[in-house]
Image (tube, rainbow, N blue to C red; front, side):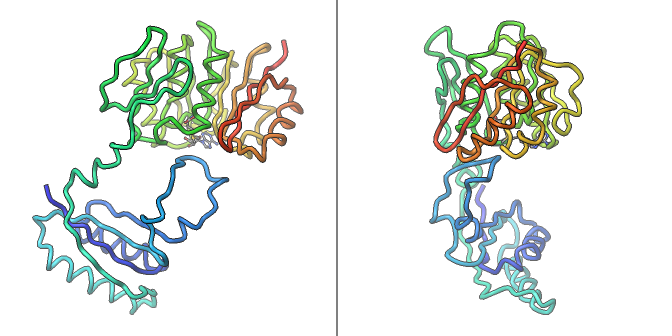
Length: 313
Ligand SMILES: C[S@@+](CC[C@H](N)C(=O)[O-])C[C@H]1O[C@@H](n2cnc3c(N)ncnc32)[C@H](O)[C@@H]1O
């Protein structure tokens, strides 16, 4: 199927109103490319982290893109959209120069083009992350495969903090351990823990979309007998302490609940934590120690840190 990509170069103030106009005109998806996004410092942002390409962003203002199927009355629809956008000035919305352009794109090009960048990637001694659409044959019998659909939530599982948590789990999990995964996202760490032999994993996330994505990925990896996913804030859904607790969230969040984290790690058990920007390493270490943990190991990858801490017996 052919689609038309309609781009409107405008001002920030007009983005919401223009997006509404495009949705009402039948657009299937709206993409916002904001010049401010490229200029923004990214070191403290966490969640989905990826390289940005300068060419994808306007030098100034915002480009709002919409996709319209070729079968629609394209010319009429575009004229209606232009009129509605111009009309926004009557509501004192600054639409800037309001340049509109249209190009034809193949569905394949915009719906799946990103998939070409994701391939199986070996991220630790034993783990390989494999996108669901790729065929992959394990190289050794020891290799553990995590199948993920990066389209569903939180990227490819290859962010440095995720990689370090998986490496940490690989070091600390023993057969039949119980595990808690705080901020499970796509479920990648819970799947990893289950593949390493954990008896049961309590995965949780504040975000309902993440909970659904984690459930889908957990089923895809056939570990639903070991992993249960809960919707909740930090430890609200946790009733029992575990042998291993993993939390890949921001440093500030980790520091906000080190006392509670201590209570849900069994004596002698381990806390693997990341999402910590290198500059905050000492603050997080100090907070963990103040709550009673002993720091066993600090891992560093790019600008990120993971800490493995033990609750004494
Ligand atoms: C960046 S992701 C990490 C995902 C995955 N564990 C990984 O290692 O790739 C952090 C996750 O923590 C979740 N999160 C943030 N604050 C939370 C909170 N207060 N309680 C539970 N989950 C939270 C976010 O929704 C997000 O899914």
